[in-house]
Image (cartoon, rainbow over all chains, first blue to last red; front, side):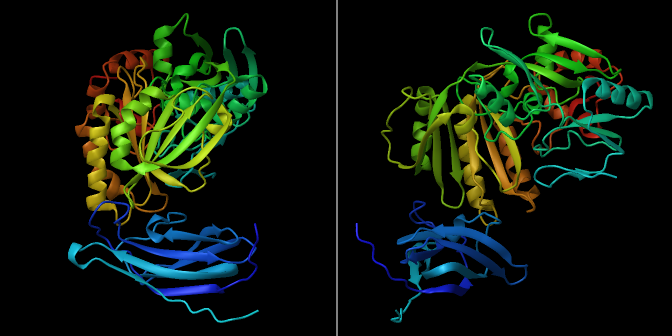
Length: 131
Length: 399
């Protein structure tokens, strides 16, 4: 199987508008309100990632550790993180993600709390060419 | 002054004296001197308990030097250990000689004696808790003397000794039932929780070890199924996503490694009530606690036994365990769910967090007085009773 050998993205990512919705409507887990990141590791080395969570009125929580294998994508819901601590739902937070290799991170939110106003959003990412 | 801290960090205290005796005679001397001084004494084990069973202002003992497999009998299927050995170490020693314990808890870091004394268990509809393996013991009493009790000669004392919370004396050696070494094949399946509940009874009937984790933040469940290779269900008809399949010796496959620390509440329900109770707990957590609670809830089967204050005495049980990250405040969560457990006829795990006292506990155990008769005979001056145990075990008429 041929490997495509190029990297994309950066090693440090930040997102300031985290807020996992408290309520959900509909069958779970499909319709569970959530914040999620999709991490693309297009390179040839496995990514070791550490995420620090920041809050308005609490000290940061460091070192949620995740791994993404080389040439794979992985989706992580912030709802599900418990190590070292869970993120309270319905609470503003931000995160800084640091990877040992370049990765692409896109953040998405699904809010099914109000059936008639359920929404989904995702951050864009523009890759610039580099060799 | 040495501070003792439990595994999760939720309990700590500084005993007046701390000893790690190297051998039984030294332990007997410590007990004798402590008793003569009118002080209390408790025995610490792995510290995995979330309740202050070993807390004392006086003397605390640790048997970390008592770790040997002393002898084993393949024909009789017994093995005798020093009482400071952990479940993990015991299984490793047994594996080296072609033997094994029949089951373990979700983790195996506890001392085997501690697991026996607190009714620690794994999951399996036909599998009793770990206290059931005890068939004989050397016990140091409050006078510092050693007695040997066995199932053959002292069945009533053994029924009290198993799940005795260290209140009848200190084990120095335990003889346990073992089996020929065997392998287990593990399947872990993610599925919809309603599907899991629909199939749990059948899965439990058809497979050796079955339990499930329910995840509050996604409302899905992970079913864990273990069988000896070639036995049990080979495929699963319900919709699921298999996330793990592995096989190995029982001591390597059955227990899990848990580095992230947690505080825990667990109740054992009559099996007939277990899943209905779980549903009520599920709804309560989703409604009130999902904001802060992300840790999974564990549901397991345990077969009944006849040990006097075993939480599984006289009835097949389903246990439900709540977990919360160590360091986070758990009181509001646990206190809000606990009445549901009580409503469904639950008995708390002795070594985990609960709010019940002797007045509420006594009606739950038909052999409560039988346990106390043995306890009083072996410890007439309540030498092994700390303040917490007094609250747990003593009502006016039960001493």
